[in-house]
Length: 235
Image (cartoon, rainbow, N blue to C red):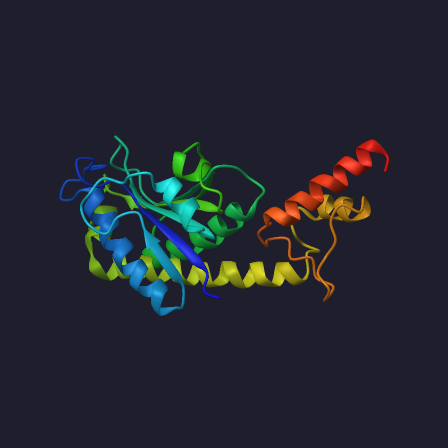
């Protein structure tokens, strides 16, 4: 089954985003997003974009959630009053989860594609990162306020390179996730999974795997809640 990726295209319509000397953030993010969509679909992913034209984003988080996105990527350009600031960085809402795992992969791929300064993965309270149920990362491709970075951002060759980096990162992320599903020894939540199994609250699949990144159905959630209540009530 094809993985579902939601592309949040920064700004749009009356919201221009950051303004460079020769470009607008909303235009660059759309160009990169369209190229990323085409590349992702070619690689076998299902893609939904928050916008495909120059319009303002509406209810992006809700759209991603209702669609059942398995990964959310927000595409942006950075900006700062000091025009010497440059480079690429990736934002997440919090540390220690699958979003950070994806962000680390994406950051490496994007920096390599752009040939920019590596500003790392940072935590920031952004709505699209906070309100989506799927792992989410926000890619600040480069600084539109820096002339050298802006030139790359406007170049179709570099836009395609970023799109290809996004595809590469998504392929690597889901490959690692699949391996983690079968063997959770290195999973960030291993301690809690072991405790849940020991308490008899959760068990793995019949093939011996636990698949920690699988979604939980309502039926499964009901079973877990009842098992917890039985423990509390001493049944």
